[in-house]
Image 1 (cartoon, rainbow, N blue to C red):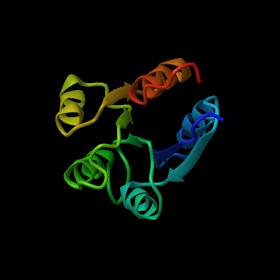
Image 2: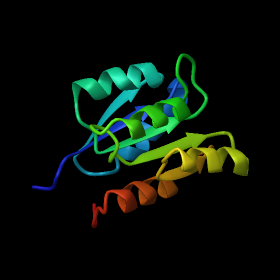
Image 3: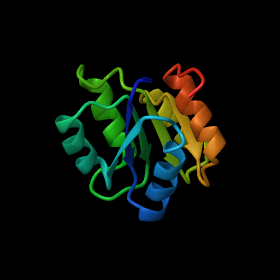
Length: 128
């Protein structure tokens, strides 16, 4: 039996959340939990462990960069790979995300294959 991977998708847009979730379902044994913003994400992270987090930058209450900085400062979560997904394609935004500790940065519209290859690369997943 192959390992089960648990993903947290943090995105305020239901359509984008659905798109990312749909893409991740192509990974066998994927368990996907959705959060609507950074505050919701932290609540869900306190309830269960995730192998990887995919977060939007622009969200109400707590944006993805604030969430990322909290994750990286907490020893419990610091090693979880984080992929930032955003409409902000400017290099300055990308640099800010990577400096805060994002493992990858993808711009919208998300390409399923690009997302899946990045997820597999970060989790060193072979042939899933």
